[in-house]
Amino acid sequence: MSEVYEKLLRCYRSVRERIDFKPEIALILGSGLGDYADGIQVEAVLDYHEIEGFPVSTVQGHRGRFIFGFVRDVPVVVMQGRVHYYEGYSMSDVVLPTRLTGMLGARILFLTNASGGIQEGMRPGDLMLITDQISDFVPSPLIGPNPDELGIRFPDMSCIYREDLRDAVRRAAVRLDIPLKEGVYIQLTGPNYESPAEIRMCRALGADAVGMSTACEAIAANHMGMGVCGISCISNLAAGISKKPLSHAEVQESADRAAPLFRQLVTESILEMSEKLQG
Image (tube, rainbow, N blue to C red; front, side):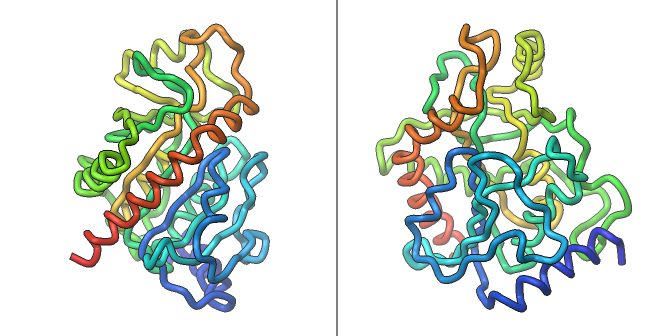
């Protein structure tokens, strides 16, 4: 048994000692989007500090706790805050929360983030369905001994963001009349924002939005057989596209403005995905 899997098991047992709840869908809330969990039917709350060996969020706007409850009648576990590679954690610790939600029973990982818009015509507050990703600039979470209990050594990544789950988000957006961009997300390490030259590189590689999370979590979830989907809230235009200096305050302000539409879209999407699980 690998050290990574042993640590994951300790976290799992620590949660199960306190919480007896099996989610169907795991939702990770990005910067400025944590208030979504306040609107669900809450069954239990567990602070990350209460879980043995669990990595703890240090970024402003990431509360650092699990919310177990229901979106309508769909059992979910919501992560209010994630940990990032730039905080100094190993990549295996960065994706430990994702893997833990899978062990707790979640079959779908619904990722959200605040990102910088690269795609032509994007504006702060836009929502973008993630169709694919570029993760080459951060270490793979699968480097090192493979935890065979989670997945195979060389997993396929041809369709990280499942087409049927993307369709569920599209249907939800149409039903709610919410404009929805689509595009490729690229993860860089941070914590510094990108230079204009780096954004030109990202655009040349085919990226439509850039951020400091998400792609590594999607790889880990895909590795262990979870279905993955993701939505980016475009919080600012990337460096060189906008003349304004970038700031974390702007990220949070833009996410706050987009929050009402985001909440509606996430809820409707979860209901659509749940139908797929039942089917």
